[in-house]
Length: 266
Image 1 (cartoon, rainbow, N blue to C red):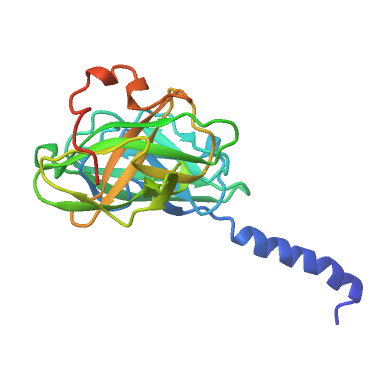
Image 2 (image 1 turned 135 degrees about the horizontal axis):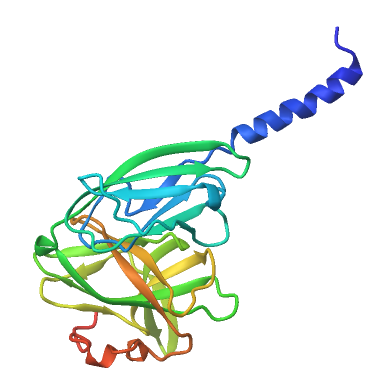
């Protein structure tokens, strides 16, 4: 029979074993989404893990159908929670890409795996998405808004949602004037009619980011995935402009861009 003293020492050992057993890190979500087909080539591949990881000992590698690396070789953490890791990619042509990940959790447990995503032929893309930007965060703000112009090119559809690794949630919202009081409301979906640009701009439609992982800084960029009722998700790159601007015209070169006076979403 074990003595009471022996039991006192055995219990903490059992507790530590159970705690570390839950610290293995696996992908919880990703951008582009795991197994998805996206209509816009991403500039980053990002993974959100179930547990905090050690970025110095964790990697992401992206390869094309021929096994050639298409990433920049510099995986980097996103935000402050320790669960997000991203790597830059560029000039992705249509085709299927493999993402191999190796994660070392904070308690040194190692995991690895692989998944795929596909970039659709842009010539047959259902949308044109332009002028994607957000303002830099002011102070300790944990929310931000993304603005863009989206045009359906082939068939009617609806924007139904969004996601980004930089925030806990990303949702379509609309600013309205309710008897002289400006209010913001969640929009379940936004109708998209072929050939009619819908402009998401300050004072109207926008993608609201809530639960920012870290402040948005001027000159930074991050991926945003848009979800549709009928078409595959589209991942675009958001460019962060300086805080305090009055609208899209504050972005360098915006006044010269086509489509800036397009149809405002209703």
